[in-house]
Length: 91
Image (cartoon, rainbow, N blue to C red; front, side, top):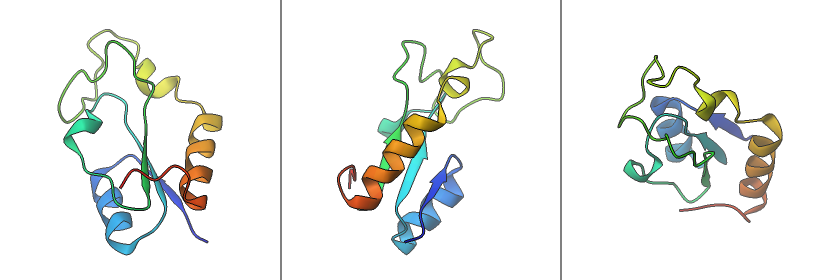
């Protein structure tokens, strides 16, 4: 079954509309401002400094962008695997 990761709203919305299992990555943006589809999960590190803005920013106010830099592929792959099997879907 096709699945994808999305870190950009247009791709996230398209995947939700098409019912594609998706792990949506959140770094500087607030996942609480978004609604997960039935085959989506949100992936975030939950750092104290995040979210730093409602819609993200190219520049990290603290200069490190750990919210995305430290989001490792194992965490993303596990979240995507869980949503594909139906174990990690939020919606």
